[in-house]
Length: 349
Figure (tube, rainbow, N blue to C red):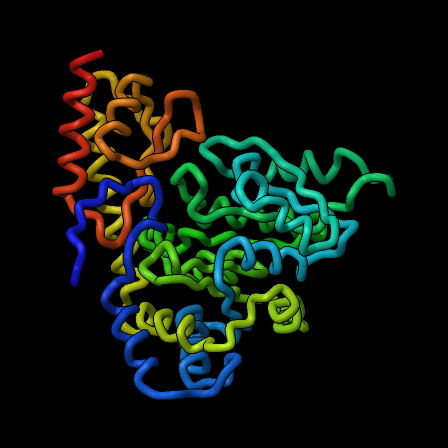
């Protein structure tokens, strides 16, 4: 029996279901038994498809979630005495429970401010040159989030500037791609143009936020950094025995093009919401809406009324600010209902 669904979930794209393309491939992979621990045909097909997507002979690994992807990748890119430079709002800094430090056996995160949630070359250089003595954790990695935690994107020029300063100081570049597909859609750029062609060494590419039930892909363009990464995954409890159930839904996204169409739809829904909010007196957008997240400043009583009406959203960035995230299955009907409730609440304050 199918339950009646009337969700008002806009806190995250993690709340969405499995997209049809991913589900079709998942069911197909379930039709027959196959080999375990990534030795199945589905995992091989998926990794080959990633190489076609990026037009690069990259190394590809699958893990369950984003925290594991980021933490294990950063651990592979440096040593315990190194440091990772990231934005002060970066997910690895604010929302991963010390995972990057834990799996690297102590590598320190060094944070920098930056407009619209983005690191810049100047901020990176300031942290690298702050100290050079042996008592300071040696900077080795720059971690950037694409799209950022505030819904903005790095264009190619910004990424090339970061690569330039990274080359100057012998730094490696990690990309947290929790919403990488949304960035590609926003910039109308290929995955290659936003990764290895601008000097990214490793990408953590999220599928969970783009229509998968679970599963992130770790993509190494610098293949030397991938040495023994399969052992890291096993030790960390990230080697799925039935790996085909992570790989097959990924293949569903890649072979059908749903990875991009899902992102385009989510971005379009965010623009729809942002455009409508822009015209509401009492609502103020906090950041440019460039991907699938909308940040808006609303009076606290309005936020309280929205929660009373069943809407879910986060307010962890900025006092009074609310984040609404659109997904592959977000509809204009849902957003129109939200906007009507916001208008009504604003009229009462």
